[in-house]
Image (cartoon, rainbow, N blue to C red):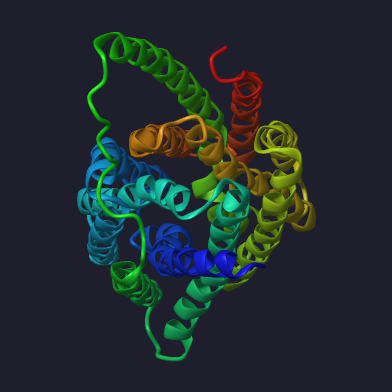
Length: 406
């Protein structure tokens, strides 16, 4: 590694460190919140609506976040995100009535949405094309590693408060959720010191009317193409979104596993996913982002359909690992694929569209998934998720094979 590459690595590592802290509260929330709602004797439908509210809160802020990122710079967006997320997570840890749960989840989702919009343009601005695939993969890979470790830590913290301090289960889970919120709040200190791109994109000098008209026509065509690609992303992501919020409850209800053991299973899976993501970054540098994206999308539906028939915990864990691998591998590929076709001054806007697709799918998926689970078994939920993922994956593969301008 050259001296210039080492100098460029410092700001990227600083941003990744902030992301790890930022994600702490989200990881604790993702694993423990259904158990928290269960301890409040709320139904699986409320669990689904809470997950939907989390996605909905992000959805409301995504387009404004794109504008903020393009005009004020990514750091202004992520520091705002850290404050909003921490407040929402803390409120969610003490909410007890369904409406309060939904409101707190929406606030936390708003913070998450701000962060997710700003992060891809931030990494695009910090990296050169040759190092970009590696930076995106390491960012996601380390977040996935922390997702696994943080999940195990969340489960162990809840059990420690319950067994070591004599808390009731509800109080123990609540305390763990609050500790996660503190971790997310600490990311504010890191982001404020990070050397990230500041301010909006430079304004181009005035050009001749004919040249301006040509650029407008080209821009409108590019916008339509990008919106079509983002729509395909939304359809694809709906499949995983149907099942993702309910795997912790799946292992608890179907296989009678303890919260602590489920935490370690999910943590081990996250470590495996992280290794695969890091490897995918190196592979993308060699075979290309588009090619790797097309291949990765083919694996989700068969794994999900197999999970709907899995009769023992060992097979269920293996298939859970395989289906869950696809999203962390494809997400950075999708970001690079979309933003690589976007002028820098519009990357915040396109990133916000991409996140609208993600949050819209998550919101619809969580609500529909909760209803499917309430009216049937997990097998039905997984079968429907696999079918939607199959259709969406084929559409996204077709879109990925198109070259810009086609």
